[in-house]
Length: 134
Image (tube, rainbow, N blue to C red; front, side, top):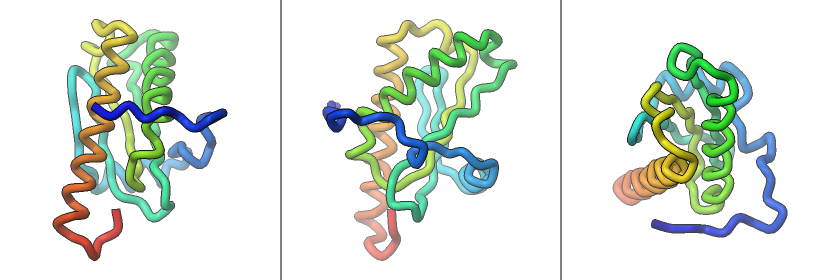
């Protein structure tokens, strides 16, 4: 597992977020996926030159707002620490109710593992198709 240190003063800039419904629709329309222990990440290459992340956590799956916020907070932190090593992809995080069984450290490891697999999968795709941007 690669633990990349965040940049000094690295925040979670708005340009690293999926903010428009169109951005979410593009990912949902043609996405690859990685999943582990109740967390699914849908991802698709983008042309922005940097990775971006969005969260679609259904109230039906995670009823309490503070629990949804905790999942987002941990996911953003994992993303922020790995952003320098990620390819140019848009990602959407989906969760199932069983994610509530995970404590903070376990959830962080799940996010880290999934983001590492996204990076590896995009790297493998790029090595097979060198003409296609990643």
